[in-house]
Structures are given as structure tokens and as C-alpha cells.
Length: 102
Ligand SMILES: [Zn+2]
Image (cartoon, rainbow, N blue to C red; front, side, top):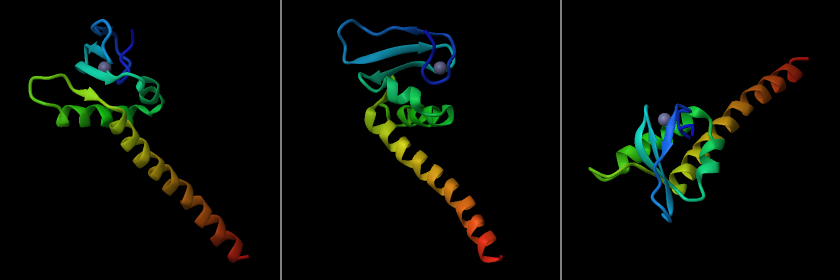
């Protein structure tokens, strides 16, 4: 399989009947993803996937695998949408300037 964070070669090491996925990536190491949020993780752009992963590392307990939760993904989605909305505002302002100067 491919790592859902970086796309490198990875191995699914999920224990049977667990409520999460366990991934072993050559680049990212071992980590877990809550069940049902892998699709949302894939839909993030790569830099946002890394932000989610780094957040999971920092908030994880010492000695345990980083766990990517739906809450973390939703948090990144919110800031990512904010960024895109800001990016859209700029050309709108420019077009207003262009029409008012006529
Ligand atoms: Zn990876």
C-alpha cells in the first residue's frame, strides 16, 4: 500500500478487528488513523496531511504511536478553507479597483 501521508511505500500493520488503521511507513514510521477518516485524510493536500501528522506526533503519549483523529483532520480542514477563502478575496478586491477606476 501507499502511505496516506507521504505516498511512499508503506505496510498495513492493523491488528485484526481494531477500530483504527495502523500504518508502517519507511518515511513517517509507525502511526495510526482512526477508522472512518482515511478518506478525509486523502482529500487534504499533502502539506495539510503533514500538518495533521505532525500534530498527532506532538499530541501523542511517549512510547505510543501517533494517532490521527477525525478531530485533528477537521481542524486542519477548517484552517485550510480559511486560507482558500482569503486567497479568493484578493482577486475580488482587484477587480473592484479595476471597475471603480474606469
Ligand atoms: Zn509516509
